[in-house]
Image (cartoon, rainbow, N blue to C red):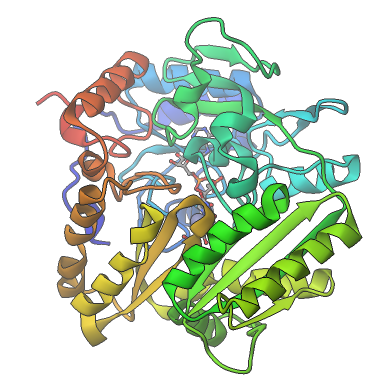
Length: 482
Ligand code: FAD
Ligand code: MLT
Ligand code: ZN
C-alpha cells in the first residue's frame, strides 16, 4: 500500500547471522525457531494482504522466561523485533516492515485460573479470544470483548491494540476490564503487574501504558481480566432506518428505553449491505422486501427471558409507530441471530474480497459521524465505493473506500482530507484499530506536539535501542537520531 513508501530501515539494527540462530535454537529448541519459507511468508503478510515484510525468522517462545531471553538477546545484538499475535490487525502493525524478528506467543495459551466468585480470569497472552469465551461459557462467564476476528486473534493482541469491538457499548474499554498484565520489556526485564484487584491506587498504574501500545513498549505475556457473568437472555433485532438522523434518534431512544440491557448498537449503510450480500457466502438480508439506506443491530442482554423480550418488542413497536424504523426483525433462535451478525461482521471480509480497500477507523461526534461518508462519496464520485458502518453506540465510524485496485489518484482524494476533517472536528484518527505502520506519522492529527514528545520519551526510556516494533505507532523522525 501507499502507506509504507517513506519508511527507511533503521541502519543501527543488525541482521541475523548463524550465531543468532544457534543461540535461539539452544534457548527455545529447534521446533520453536522457524525458518521455513511457507510459514514465514504468511507471518510476513497482514490479514488484508496490504503490508508485507521480509523477515527470515519467526520465534515461538513457550514461557515468559523464553520471551525474556529472546528480548534480552535481541536488545544486546540490536536485532529489531515485531510481536505478532493472531495477525488480524488492520493497520500494518503486526507484520515486519523489513527483516525484524517475529515473536509470536501463540504457544503460550494456557488458562491460569478463574476466580469463580469474582469472575477474574488469568491466562497466558497467546490464548485465542474465542477459546477463552468458550471456556468461560462453561463457567457462567463471558469475555467482555467480542469481535469478528475472535476465532484467530489472541488476548495479548487484543490488549496490545486496546481492541473495542461489538460489546464496548455495554462492557466498556479494556482499560477498565484488564486488571493486570505481565510484560517483558525490550531488555528482557519481566514486569509482574499481574494483579487481580479491582482497586489498587499505589502509584502510577503502569499496565495502562501497555494497553494499546501495539507492541512498541514490550511483549505482553500474561493477562488478568474481569469477566462479567453470562446472562441467560440475549435478544437481537435487525432494523432498517430511512436516514442517518433516524439512526441517531434511535440510539438515544435505545439508551433511554432499553437502559441496562442494551449490549450492542451497531450500524451499516446500504452500500455495506450490498457489498456483503454480493461477496459473503451465505449472507442473507434479514429484511429482504426492499433495500434501505441504513441498518441497525440492537442486542439486549439481561436476566429475564420474558421481560427482556417484551421490553425489546415494545421498544420496536414504539419506534415503528413513531416512524424511526421502517422495518425490523427479531432473531427467533441462535441460528437466526448468527445470520444477523454475519451481515455486520462479514463487511470486513466482503471488502477484502472486493479488491483494494482504504480503511479508516474514526471517532467523531455522533451528529457529524455520517457527514464525512457523504462528503467522501461526493469527492470520489464513481471511481470508488464508500462504505460507512461501525459501532454507532460508541461514536466509532468505519469509513472504507473500496476499489478494484490501489490507485494513487483515489488515494490523493482521500488523504490528507480525511485526517484534516477528523482533526477539525476534534475526532480521533484511530478509534480502536491503532496506528500501526499505516498511521505512525499521522498521530499529530489527534495528539499535540507536547503529547507526542512525551510518548517518544517514554518509548526511549523503555526501549532505548528502539528494537520493539520499529516504524510503528510514533513518527520515525521522533525516535531515530539523525
Ligand atoms: P496482531 O494483529 O497479531 O497484532 C496487533 C498489534 O498488537 C501489533 O502491533 C502487534 O505487534 C501487537 N501484539 C500482538 N500480540 C502482542 C503481545 N503479546 N505483546 C505485545 N504486542 C502484541 N478490532 C477492533 O478493535 N474491533 C473490532 O471490532 C475488530 N474487528 C475485526 C474484525 C476482523 C474480521 C478483523 C480481521 C479484524 C478486526 N479487528 C477489530 C482488528 C484486530 O482483530 C484487533 O486489532 C485484534 O485485537 C488484534 O489481535 P491479534 O492477536 O490478531 O494481534
Ligand atoms: C469491525 O467493526 O467490523 C471491525 O473493526 C473491522 C473493520 O473495521 O472492518
Ligand atoms: Zn470495529
